[in-house]
Image 1 (spheres, rainbow, N blue to C red):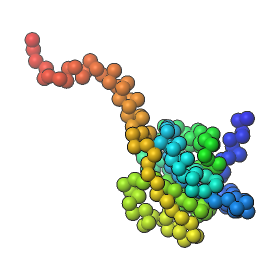
Image 2: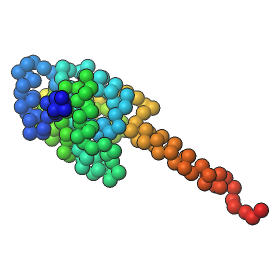
Image 3: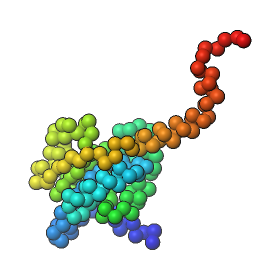
Image 4: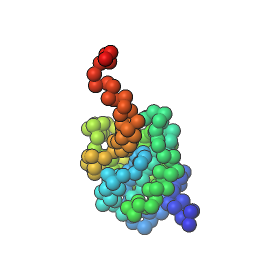
Length: 185
């Protein structure tokens, strides 16, 4: 039982073979990538939306090291293997691969998905200038930018809420003291 999810975890070195096997079956491959730390409903909706663009959804999970290089030493919260395994249990995702680099461009070059899905963010305004976009269109693939599937939720907001609530209860006595300057009675 424990190893059944591992059949859906594809190493970077097996991505070209996966592409060939899926193409032999006439399947349209969709790929997306992210950290997927503290999975929430916005992520799940996003995977469902991505899956609509093809037959097989392959999801890239940023490695611990790749996340640290981009987001700092306090991230990720969950280990790459935990995040990857968690995704294999979602019905919309057929395969998962761990991304060694902050960019998924090397993975796109190996897997050559028909459709690469990315989420609309401030930094995606110029996505046609990205090496990911250029890689996908060079081999004839398509890049689609989809809206966030939950504007109210993010991993950062969840962590802030959890820590903020706990800190609020710990520091409430101290906060009372901050209301007015200290003075003698």
